[in-house]
Image: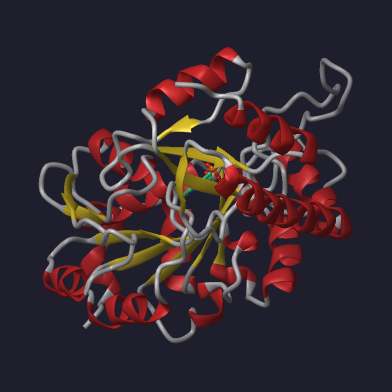
Length: 350
Ligand SMILES: *Cc1c(COP(=O)(O)O)cnc(C)c1O
């Protein structure tokens, strides 16, 4: 049985959040002298002299419509990496509590645990990067405060089977964080459509991948209003800048461009999946619901990595990740970049 209060650190339950000037007064006054801002204007070409909306209402209103959710179910952060860190800090008392991860997976979960002095328990995925029945049982039996499940998973590219995930959601006593950074490339509905069923579900998404805004730093967490208000309680008051909020609104109003890029990247993935098998050194291409392919090589993958680098092409070497021996992770690029990558791999000798 999941009980939210039992998964929130006692000091966080008890504390008073910072109340910013913009929390205490919203709206338009003629004279704004409450926040020690500079009423004269801004240095530089654009005007940013006022603090941004700490609750990012305009962006959340657009997102709520896009995702079919209530704004109270949305948290915005300085990248999803901020949400990952805040979720660990919200639930785990340093030196005492633990979180679960399922390797091979995204590296930031482990970093957030280490940074916060939180114990990390690793439950490996199967050889085809799924949750075994045993793994589900282990998670359900665990006293950890949080489990991170990445679907589509990075660096493997596959979706986790919905049935196993559902068993975790029903049985685990802590928060279940489903990281959907790559959801826009996946042929499956987002877990946001199941939020009403599972009070322990937190879904992470980001503007860094399909939206093409990695440099902006904007991540999203979707959960029950109760979980979201705890995240808002502990976030830095102005964690999403005015520049980011304005730009995100413009991007959300540019949905056709997003969709066109998404389709082009999906076509690029299909093109790579069609052309890589004919490359002699390619042993296996793992199925992908993301904008990258995990590829196992017949020859020494680290040597292939170094060779690609010498050709001016950088990919991600994942050979040391559990279950990923001999593997490189290749991001889908432009049509020209994909062609250069395949051409370079074809010309690899030894
Ligand atoms: C890229 C990625 C993110 C995105 O992080 P941001 O901080 O939003 O850029 C989150 N999770 C996974 C698994 C990723 O691969």
